[in-house]
Amino acid sequence: MYERIGLRAALGLALGAAATLAHAEGNNFIGLGVGVVPVYEGSSKYRAVPLPLINYQSGAFFISPRAGLPALGLRTRLATDLEAGVFLGMSLGRDSDDADRTKGMRDIDFHAAYGAYVEWTPGRYSLGAAWRQAAKSGYGGTLELRTSYAVVQSEQQQLRLGVSTQWSNSNAMNTWFGVTRADAARSDEGLSPYTASSGFKSAAAFANWNYRLTKDWSVLSTVGVATVLGDARDSPLNERKTNLFGSVGVTYRF
Image (cartoon, rainbow, N blue to C red; front, side):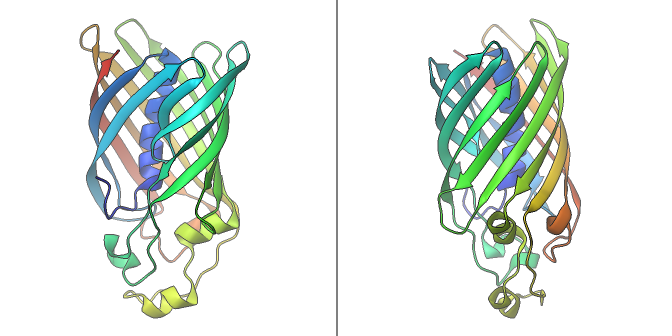
C-alpha cells in the first residue's frame, strides 16, 4: 500500500499525534484516514496517502503508530501516570524517483524498526520520549521528544495541542539528508556531495481534534507544521525548510 513513498517523518508526525490522543483517552479503535504530507522532509511537493488508524491495548500488549506505521509493543506501569515500553514495527523508505531532487540517488529501503519509550500523562498533559532504531545496518536511530495538552476535553470531543522535536545520529541524518559522491555523480539535479552530522533534525507543532459522532464512531483529525533543523536544514536535498501536514479519518471504537 505504501509503495514509492518517502513519507516516513511526515506520516510519523501525523500518526504519532493521533496516537498521543488515543493514548490519552485510553480508547481501542480501528479506522482509515487520508493524510496530506510532503513527498519527503524538505520537499516542495505534497501528496495524499491512505493512513491506517489503529490503537489497541490489552494488559501489557499494545498496537500503536510508531516509526510511521502501526507497531507491536509491550508496556509497563512505572508509577501513577508514568509508563515505559518497547516496540517493533516497520519504517517507510524513499525511492529515488519520488521527486525531481532525489532522482538518480540511492533508494532508502522499507525496513524494520525497533525502540523504546517513556511517557508521563498527568491530567490533560502528555510528555514523552522515544528512541527509534532502524533494524537495517547504517540507517541509524532517532530520538523524539513530544509534549501536548488537551485544551478542550469533554465526553463528545477533545482538542489537543502539542509540539515535538527529533534528534538523529549521524547514520540517520546521512541516510535521509546526506549526498554521497556516488549520489552526486548520478543525481539528475547535479547535487553536490554533502555529509550531515548528528543533531536535532526537525521540530513540529500540531493540533489533534477528535469528535465523537456516535457512541462508537468518531472523526479524528490532525494538522501541523514541521521545519528541518541543523545539518538537515542545510542539505542540498531541501527545497523548502518548512512543511505543513495533516490528516483526517474515521475510527470505530471497540
